[in-house]
Image (cartoon, rainbow, N blue to C red; front, side):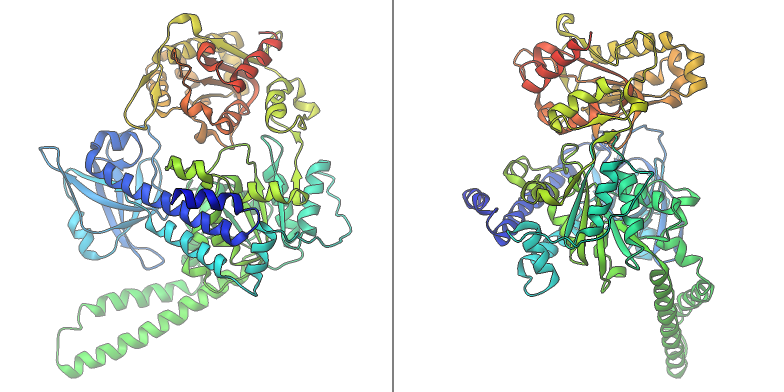
Length: 637
């Protein structure tokens, strides 16, 4: 397989078909790897490690069961232990139930369920049958584990196959214009003025409006990409009745949907939000469905059908036949009501919003859109983008390929190009469709400058209102605490759970405390000055969280402190950021820190103060960290 892929890699700039076939092969590698990895984890990994890695909840209690508005049988499941660990359960993900026996062995129930909603403690699970609920209801030593997600892979393979085979239709044209040598077209329009946007944002919105095939909004950290994208969507709706808005993750879909709702746009969200509040729920398909005027009639018909289905085996032949006829009429009426409600919901919505994978949902079958907007496009696998592109006449991608890449488990597939996104391909081959947003509103200029020089050709500028802002007089905005002479050493914790450097974490907390004292506790609470503690390694994050919990001096500021991985901080910002780089070894091995796009995210989260802790002797072997260190020293520390 490998030589064939390498051969195709040289060809992919010439032929979209070869490029897509290579994507199929690489995606197959990732699929096989992840499937094998899941099997290995299921068989070999202990429950406590699965819990720590967010793959599993144990123990859990089952709660109430009911039919939801979509007529799905659901079961509520609650985590019984209060553990501060991010988990990987979210809408649409498959899961399985298991029991742990006294000897520690696990037995898995023979059915797959699907997550409808999950927060930190509670999950609503779509169950395949009433029998499956009886299997687990009230069971002791019960747990739930994430299951291998075949559905997403099937949707991606199917999309790639359809694009490869496309001929003589709009999809075939887009294939050539996005991946091939055919240049995308622009229409001539009189520029629209947006006094509340800056010139690069205004230019980006106008380029989106003029694009016949494709446009890209490239938004570096703090440049107002979401603001620009919302404006572009809002303006597009003056020209088109409805658009499709997608993103890789549920969280990103929620974020853009919420901003559009704030603009008074009617959004229909396919799938459940990650953060549930009344505002978010109000635009979900499920909530809209159950608040439709025809829903009470539909609900009573479904209830009657469930009641009657239990009676079909009793009584005389004539009686059973009459019952079947009645049920048939009721089913017809229920179907008619569902069709009517769906038509009303979809016809009245300006925006249909979903994840890229959920755009293949049966609810969207047969729907076409003039424009598809893909937010966070640089975090999405190319195959996932094509799932949604099949439904649209033109596509607008927004994101930043210098920040977090897609999550890929198979190193070889990533190395051979699976981590190169559709957005990256287009930026490289069709630069004329790209709008770079250049004015950033987040960071003090000293914090921004290194990232701008290394990743964005020095093109970013700090807006006047943030350029010199800081928390303390005579303070440097960016500093590096070098741990080289302290004898700190990293250690390895569990497979792929990552590395830990407890001494560095303890030093970070000590530095945090002294910085809090310098600012003054009262001022922090009055001005709501917030802090972020970032590490690339999950184990370091967990250690920092456990230490903060036990530290009474930090208790008053607990709600102003966020501790997370780099991935967990994507799209977020804080007044003060501390980064723990963890790595400390004699060989200069930096592993995960080689992914400079992740580091770009980490060093661009701070508004006014950035503090990096790391061993320069280890990290200085890499030109990026060497340059960063000398840049920080030039800044006066």
